[in-house]
Length: 243
Ligand SMILES: [Zn+2]
Image (cartoon, rainbow, N blue to C red; front, side, top):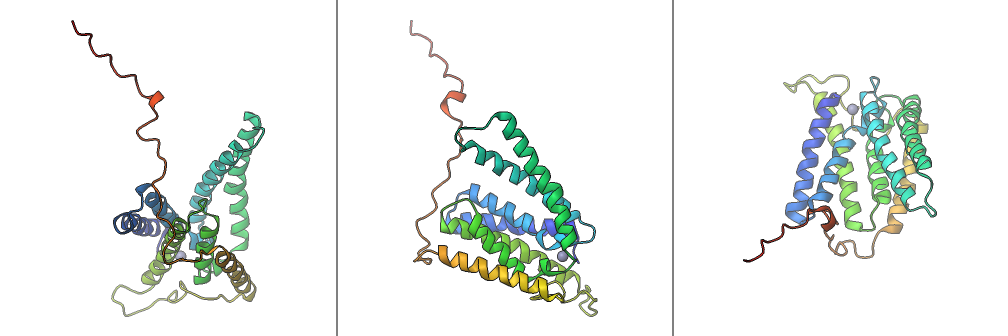
């Protein structure tokens, strides 16, 4: 099976190519493309969250912790009346610690390596969840991010499959075929993941636009503070007064 570094490199390469392709072929702004590339890269680690060494889990919960902390902070900006700064600070720190340590403990208890987290239905679950919860109301954008996540996830399964075939292609080691699976030996986790998949698919169908093939309105360019707002710039030099 591929190791942590191989997985992240492979997924990052695909992610960059994917983001670039959305720009070249669909004219989508690079800012969206770069986020899609980031999601693809991170998703290359998702299947091994349950690995024995837990390098992926540590890296993943660390990054996820930062993202969740940022999300909590953003949420609090919108709260009326705005909570005290000290409260916001503790909420952000708390969210980070909870994800970084709490979620990691919980995941490492639950999971068994090459269990259900390493399967095709789980890939679809992550894709559907991304479509549902990506913070945008644009169908096309959410679809693009969900596709990035599934691309990264499948790149991992593919790499694990490739690595389980010996380079001369003759001998196949014991892990062959265990990377891309549709179910596991545990009926409970298999049923749970399919149940979750059915539920999420149903939610996706509810939100699916009437005319998915016209792809809705094109994605407008995002607001990027670049060049920086006027007030941040130095005032223009005064032209020398004519003599
Ligand atoms: Zn793996």
